[in-house]
Image (tube, helix red, strand yellow):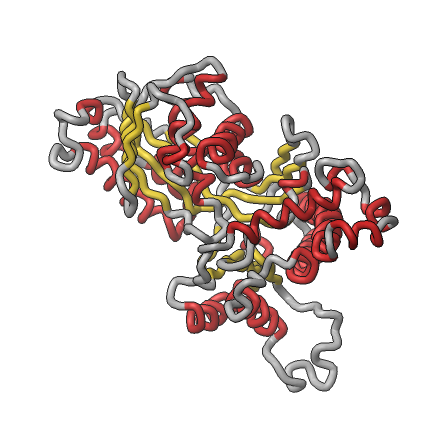
Length: 468
C-alpha cells in the first residue's frame, strides 16, 4: 500500500479492531497516532528527501514485534532448560519500503540513524555492540540459507523499555528478520526460524552470547512454554494466560539501576552452571540430574566453588517449577465457567502465584542475581522486592494480622520476583487489581514517576500488519 492509503485505512473499523487486539483499550488510540507519525515522516520530502529515498513514495509495509516478559525459568535457557514467557503490548514498530539496491537505512525515534551496505556481509569487529552489526548479521544469515536479500528504508519507533528485561534488543533483531523475510522471501519463515536468525546475529556479529529465549518469545506471541532440551528444535507451546481476567495486574518496576559494567556478572551465571556440569563430562546442566550432582558435592566444592553449586541447584528447581507453573495455567484454562469452576480457577491461580514467589526466592538465594557483589551499596532490586512483599502482606507490624502476623507460611495475594537477567534494573509483580494504584504510588514515590509499567499479554508475535 502507499503511504496515503495507509493513512486513510488506519482509521477504519478493521484497523481499530487490530489496534485494540495489539494494545488494549488504553493503548489503541496512542498506537494509531504513533503509526501515523511514522508514515507521515516517510511522506514528507523534507524528512526523507525524495532524491535520497525515492522508494518512500511507493509501496510501504508495516511491521510490529513485541517485547516479552519472563513468567518463569530465570537463567535456564543457556543450559537448555525450560521457560515460560509471554509477548507484551510494548513493541517495536517499523514502516518499511523495499529498495532495489543493497542499502538498509533504518531510523528509530530517539536513536542515531543507521545505514548499512549489505553487499558486504563480512563480520566487522568495529561494529560489535552496534545496530549495524545486527542488520549485517541477519542479512548474512539469510544469504547462508540461500535467500539473499536487498535493502530497505524504515522509519521505526520502539516502545519496549530498555534495561528492563523486556527484551528491547531481541524485539529489534526479530523486527529486522521479519522485514527481510516479508519483503524478499514471501514471509515464509516461522517464528522460531526468525528467532534463530536474530540470535545468531547477536551471538556472532553483535558479540553477545545470549540464549534463544528472548527472541523466541518475541517472535511467537501470547504466553508460551519453551523447552530448550534440543537447541536445534526447541519445543514451543502456546498457553492461554490473562492475569487481569484472574484479578491481577502484571507489572514491572524499573528501579533505575545501571547495567554498566555488569557483563561479567551476567556471563558468570552460565559459566558457573556449565562448570558444574563439566565435572561430570557434560556440556550443560540439562544433561545431568540433581541426584548425581549432589552425590559429588565435596569434589564440586573444590573445583567450582559453592556459588556454582547453588546456581546449579537453582537450575534444577526452576525447571521443575516451570512444569508446575504450566500445569497450573492449564488447569486455569480447563475449568468450567460455573461457580465450581471459578473456585478451581482461583485455586490454580493461587498455586501459580505461589510458584512465582518460589522462583523469586530461588533467584535471590541460590542464583544470586539480585545485585552485583561488586556494588553492595546499590541494591535497588532487593529494596523493591522487599517493599513489594511487605505491601502485599498488608504492611508491617503485628497489628496487621494480629499477634500471628508473619507466621502464615508467607501466603499473601500476589507475587514478585526478579525480572530478566538481574543484578540491576527490574522486578516483576502480580498485584490484585484493587491494590494497583496504591502500589504504583509506593513504587513511583521511591523509584520515580513512570517506574511502574502494567503489562498486557498480546496475542501476536512478529507480524506484518495488514491494513487493507
